[in-house]
Structures are given as structure tokens and as C-alpha cells.
Length: 282
Figure 1 (spheres, one colour):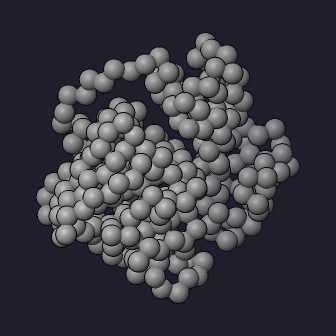
Figure 2 (figure 1 turned 60 degrees about the vertical axis):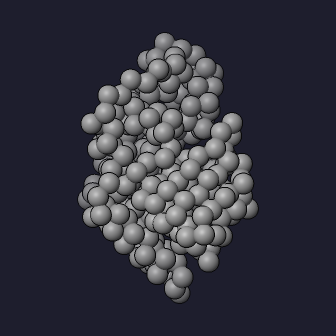
């Protein structure tokens, strides 16, 4: 059965997989094979996933033609751009080699799970996710399965990063790759205190128009969209994870006034800062 709740699609029956399973909003997927094998057609190529292997890639690259062995089984988790962008913003804050890992994963989307413990841990996350998604829904449960989906993704990324750290990474980076990496690194260092594309373009010695072009090609977002994601991520952190008052957060993020900050938050979250803090979620 395929479970679809808000921005997550999940199934533990991979016989249900077809091109139609991916909605317009769900752009990235993690597929884990627990038995048998599957071959699938992707743009300009095909790939095969076997037992204890997984594939991570944008769903736009799947062409279809899924061929399975009779004993094929596993899990599929698909999430939308919003969650992917949130994860990207969080990962780039803690992982200095995030761009190297991203590039390596793009070129090698099939990844082998090493160790029975890692396989069992991932299966546990998926089993819990299924229990929550097939049960009665509530605001608390929605929060839980979103956290479970993130936790499973982080577990996968931890394994990928550990493997890549032990390998010699020697990817050929284009000028666009370097600009996109440097742009997000500047965002990370700036910590959401500047929100103008021109400010970052000046630091990178390029025009705002070219920076936006590079972001669309390399990050699948506009430059202003990436900046907005970082700013919103920091706003959520300060509202939900600290005791700073609204005036202090306004000053920390360099908004011109409290009223301007509140207007920005309402525009992007649909609620006031105090409402977000009271509810404990966004």
C-alpha cells in the first residue's frame, strides 16, 4: 500500500512502484532494497538495485520500465522540495564537505548499506514511519512522522558521509559548482543576517542575475529562494529552540525593526512569531 500524507510518500510494497507514484510536489526519493533486485530506466542510462542497497535521486530522472525479480522487496520514501531544502540548509551548517558529498552522490546514486546493524536501524525507522502513517492522523502524529522521515534521511546521510570520507574524492567541478558551493557557504557563515541577492553576488564578484542562474541550474532554486530558506530556518531555530525574545531575534538577524520582522514571519509562515512559539511548530 502507498501512504501519502502531506509532503511524504511511503510504501513497503515496491510492487506498487510506477512512474505515477511520484506527484508533482514529490521530487526526491530514497529506495531501499531488502531482497531480490530491481532494474529501472533513468535518463540516458539504467541502474540496478540489489539486496541491502539503496538509491537516492531526484524523481525527475526516473523514466520508468521497472523490472523486478520475483523475490524483490524493500521500502520507498519520497519527499518534496520543501523538506529537501530544509535538510540541505541543516546539513550545510554541520558538514563542511557537504558539496563534495552531494556531487559524489549525484554521480553514484546506488549506495550499499554496510553492516546488519545499519540495515536493521533503517528498517526500524521505516517500520515506525509506516505505523504512524497508516494510523489515525493528528497534528502531533504529523509532527512525529515528519521527524521520523528526517531521522531516517539523516541516518542514510551519516552512512554515505562515512563511506565518502574513507575514499579519495576527486570530482571535476565546474565554475558553476564552485559558485553554488561558495554561495551556500557564505549563507552558512552569514547565519541568515543578509537577505539581498546583490549582497552575496558582490562577495562572489558576479552579477545578481548570474548568481540566480547558477542557483537554478545547480540547486533547483532561485538565489532569493535559497536565501529565504536559510533565513526561515534560522527564524525557526531562534523561535523554537531558544529563549530569546522577539526583539533579540530581530536584532540577531539584523531586521530593521520588530514590526518588519513580524511582517516577514507572517508572510512566510502564515503566523506571527508569538503564535509559532506558542504552538511549538511551523
